[in-house]
Image (cartoon, rainbow, N blue to C red; front, side, top):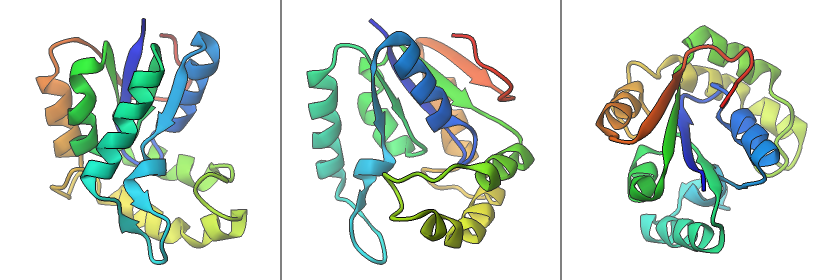
Length: 163
């Protein structure tokens, strides 16, 4: 019964790996971006209670799952239910290249153009990963990884995964 958490910088390959595991292992997939934000313009963070309730609903309706995102505060809420964590710890340059090559994500953006319009902001966000000290930062992710007592893997390049 795999219950996997995948986290790391934007553009690190979290969604790609989660989709691959979901398809190959026939497990449910939850992208935390879909519940961490309210559908407002400009986007606003959803209350943590709402996000937590949605995560609980997801894990209670699926025996096997993969959850991915960069939100350490949400990952910590579900860490006891996880059987494995995967830290996508790629170089910033790789994350930026991945972001530039990212296909349209229709569950996040109304059009490919809307996604591309956000690219400069995303690249700056990715570049600041090691400088920030927030829930999305390298320091938060590294601390979460080090503190996890169960099975864990750190991925430092995304040229094919084998789990």
